Every structure is written in structure tokens, then in C-alpha cells.
Image (cartoon, rainbow, N blue to C red):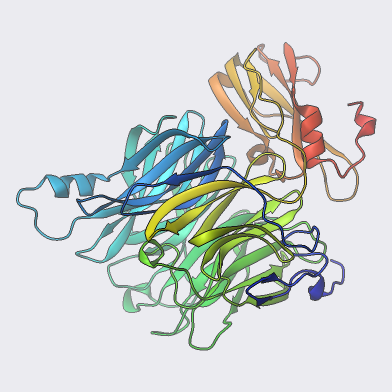
Length: 537
């Protein structure tokens, strides 16, 4: 790593007018003026209140998930909305768990009714996994729930993680990443009601079944004899494996402190970092994003003050208050800098081609931007809880906005800096449909597929991957980010070569090689900073 001056990267918000303008930023580069760009938005305007927790880019659009209070009957359900690339509704569904449906069917109803919520989503080959929790008020516990749904949101299966052996009497999952075999999620778990909890890592199969799970306590203690809470809020791939972040309680009744853990590929702990920013107030890391800036490998964002992103306060409180922070870390766990942002709690971060952008609230209004640029700010009270890459340099922000006293789940596109337009709409002709710069859907039966990927290895040169990735039985969605662990902001899928005969797949000897029809636009988008003339494109 090279030397640096932390003043290059971030300055705290000094006034309500905007962030200090300092050239170069951990949260992205760009001009030092404050600009608010246009965008297309969607609002779940159905009273009394709702919130989106996560946004996922999917085939030809986005999937946003969260929760809503259903009018008149006082029931909380999970909420999922599929949007087109123009942020227009494709379908919208609410989700009731089996315990909630059974409780509502009882006559007479006795005791509190279970409540449901969704916190994150993944795309599978033929639908989605929706992950959330069911809250049982009578016992005051959350239990993780996983729905496997079709492409239109129809539920195929529903699983509770409350019956795992020696685990999960209390649990919820907050974030996750796609792996070669499924999805690795993080959250918190406790062996019993009103007992201590630990950070939790859960390896899910593509159908939502549990392949493995690991409890990661922040301190050496018996969870069944304590009440202290450890929570993982976010996870990201890292050069040495993974990095997870959240908070832990060092002592009974003590405020939470920030907690970051480096894991190897086998989920063994490499290092951990703990910090408190304000005496007597909680410090919580809410998100972690990789960074391309020399000097550190990822950026963490979070809040100081009494606030729970995944609890009930974010749905009912009229405004988001408190301070936020941002920090840069190396993959060895060394913190290179940290700054506190007054009146600006941060809940999400995202790496883009122009750097890392963050989302949260500023002076009570929803906000997206960098240290020296505001890309978007709501006119009304609100909060941005999730960000996803769109097309080109566009991102999609999701969260909640309060207009005329009504809190509503909300999402919109935000242009981040300058960049290229999105590629042309992929063609459906032939067996391969290129969905974007990293994904292709293949229809048919093939014994093997060779994927060709061009990427930036980080040394100023051009890297190429030419590797077989297995066959296709009817239909397969191939994502080279998951297959090869490449950075989606600096890698482009150039072609796929299809094989129908048995034997070793040899490049150039396949039955058909199909090139990405949008390759030129993809190169401009994710590899425009490299000299790729030698590729003959």
C-alpha cells in the first residue's frame, strides 16, 4: 500500500449546506460543486407506512424488498416490488409467514399476531430468494425466514431457520453475497429467548436450504448466561476472503461499539477491529464496500446514536437523526482514516466506476452522494437504506420518504457523476441472452461452456479469463462475478463458447461461440480507463 493523506478522501459535513469540497474522495471523485441530478422514481404510496430495505439489480430491472403495515388490520408483512429499468412496477406482492396466517385464522384471536419483514433478496436461475424475519411479540424474538419465489413473486417454498440444531431461537439476516455454490449471508443469532447473541454466518443453497452456519461471538463468553448482543450488518468479498461488519456490546448494558472482522475463504477469523466514537452512545457499522483507492481496500459507513436500521423505529419515526461516520481499512484490518459526519447517518455504500458512493440521511432528508458532491437529496424527510448499481454510472437508491406525514417505501434512479449510457437492450435471438456486462442466460442443453472475461487486474494492464464453467441443462444464468470472483465494476463478459460433445472443452473447438452484442458499450463502461486497442475491438 502507498502513503496517503486522509484529507484527500473525506471531510466531515461542516454546515447544513453540504459536504466540504476536498479534491479526491473515499466516496468517489468528481467536481467539487454540489449538484442534484434528475432521475425516475417509484413510491409504494399505500398507507399507513412502508419501507424498502434492499435493492437488487435483476434481469431488465430491479427488485426492492422491505415491509409494510397493511391498512385497517394492523398487520406487518414483507414487501417485494419488481421494477423495470425505467422504475415502473412489473409486479408487487406482500408476504405473510405461515405463523402469521395461522394466528389470524384462529377464532377468537388470542395474543399478539406475528409480524413479517424482508431484509434482502437474491436472484436465482428461475426466480428469487427473499430473506427476512418473523417477529413473535409474545416472546419478543425474531426468527429468520426464507421464501423461494418464482419470477413473478409467487411463493414456491417457505423456510424458518428457527429449528436449526443448537442455534437460531432468535435470529435475523441482514446482508449477503453470492458465492460459487449459493449465497453467504450474515446477521445475528441466539440460542434462546432473552439470551446473548453472536454474529452469524449462514451458507444458503440456491433453493434457500441451509448448507452450513457459523456462530461468531465478539467476546469469549457463554451466550446462554449473558444478554449481550453481537450483530453482523454487512458482508463483502475481500482480497483475503471476506470482511463482515456490524456492532457488539462489550459489557452488559453498555452501548454497542463498531465491529469489523476479516475472514479467510474458509470463514476463519484473520483479524478484527473494534471502536467507539461517542461516549455513552452506540456505534454501529451498517455497510462495507470494496474500494479501488490506493492505500486501503474497503470503506465502512455507519451511525452513532440510538438508531436501529432493522428495527421498528425506522418505519415509525418521523425523521432520521444522529451522526454518521465513514472509514477506510486495509484487508489486513488497518484503519487508515475515520471521519464523523454531523447530522448525517449513513446506512449503505456502493462501489461504482467513479468510486464509492454512500446513502443515508442528511439533516433528516434522504441523501446519496460523495464527500464532495451531492447526487440526490429528498425535499421531504426520508432515508436511503440501500443502493444498487444500475446501468452506466447510474445507481438505484431505495428506502423511505415521508410526504404529508405519510411514510412510504420509495426507490429512484440517481445519476452518479458523468458516464456512458446503458448498453442496448440485449437480443433474445439464439441460445445466449446477454443481460448486462457480467451476466448471460443460456437456453438449451450443453455439456460445457467456456466463458471469456476481460478485466482490470489492477496493474494497469488488461487481464483475460478463458475458462470452462460447466454445462447447461435446459436453462442457466451465468454471472462471471460469482464464477470468477471478479469486480463487477472492472470486468466484462466478452463471449461464451458452447459445447455439445463429451470430453474436455478446448477453447476454439466448441459448437458455437456467441459474443456479447454490447461489448463496445461494456468496455466503455467498466474498462474505459484501460488501453484495450490490442484486443482488436
